[in-house]
Image 1: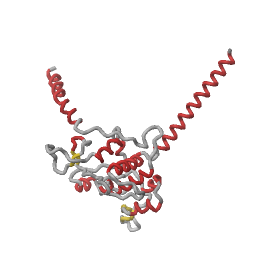
Image 2: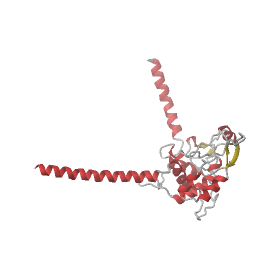
Image 3: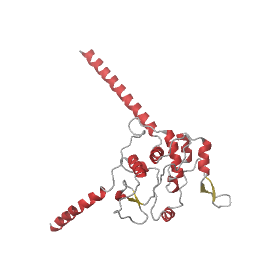
Amino acid sequence: MRRLVGVALLLAALAPAAVHAADEADPPKRVQWSFDGLFGTFDLPAARRGLQVYLDSCGTCHSLRFVAYRNLLEIGLTGDEAKAIAASHEVRDGPDETGAYFMRPAGLADRFVPPFANEQAARFANGGAYPPDLSLMYKARLRGADYVYSLLTGYGDPSPDVEFAPGMNYNRYFPGRQIAMPQPLLDGMVQYADGTPATVDQMARDVLQFLAWAAEPYLPVRHRMGLGVLVYLLLLTGLLYAVKRAVWRDQH
């Protein structure tokens, strides 16, 4: 009994600290996304801009291993554009007729080539931190799109009394407000072909459109299918109700 009381007292003592630690990060901003809701769909021009942000910034550290280069045709890239993006990377292939493996330019059938050969190389290049794959990142937590957007726009200067571990950066939306990833987006770091101003806010919104599409490319199709099923069920319900009334009317 004493042991149980001791455990209860220990948990009670730790609870405030745990709550305080969880409250250190600000809650994510609430953003309206085109892909939310029953009629949600992707903003394809924004997704294409987000692809540019990924290639120029995020893709230097983060992989996208569940997406193939041919999938880029679905957001409006031409075959030549997708081939050019693929060909800028090399993949290991083979064996050839001699039994040797070789490197070749990636093609449309290949998946996005990761920026590092393995986890150890990624950690070595990033001071021990491992940049996660972004294929499903926005689905990794509740309100994932809001969280990732907030994280990308949440960098700033901390108050002077905040102590930082070596190599860490201040981000108000990351647990503990310290994150190993340097600020990835800076105003004007890319030049959009459609003339959209490349502000940090705009780039964060655009790359979220791209990452949301990468995680659920068939989301609009599923939404249309679900809407069609609902309409069908409503019509069927009305028909069955009309048949029931007709049958019971004849019996009276």
